[in-house]
Length: 190
Image 1 (spheres, rainbow, N blue to C red):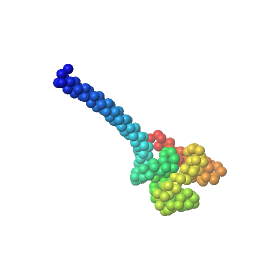
Image 2: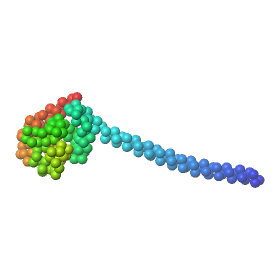
Image 3: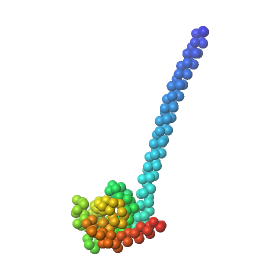
Image 4: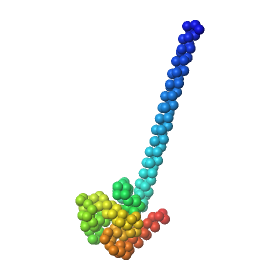
């Protein structure tokens, strides 16, 4: 073999090696890109899953009190933070105040969940005159009621309305539970 042919064969061999290395690198790069795309798709699905309850809550609040729509995020996050079903929080807030953050009841209860002063002192160190503090205290108390009722919505609402220490909470809070049921049925139909 002459010197020129040897150089050509060497270059071909070098080109083949470099091509193989590049193909392997591109294969790894493509695999990495596919993994990134898969990860992004999963993140998007999670975001859609997170967004759906927010959108449903926003639509619900819009029908009841359009002026409170800006509180949707606070309601959704509060339900999540206290490990409560969002529907229960929406139903309770609707029944108690129609999502009115500045609501004040005849017995001195305050905020969107109409927290009594004694209940507030029991569960919160915040400011009773601050509606956001009252909402958080109401969620904490609702969570206590939900746990005691072992997830039963009617019993939870009865405890919330009549107190955790009532012997027959469903009897004591019958009107409140009936109102909540009517609200729930109305919104499940629409």
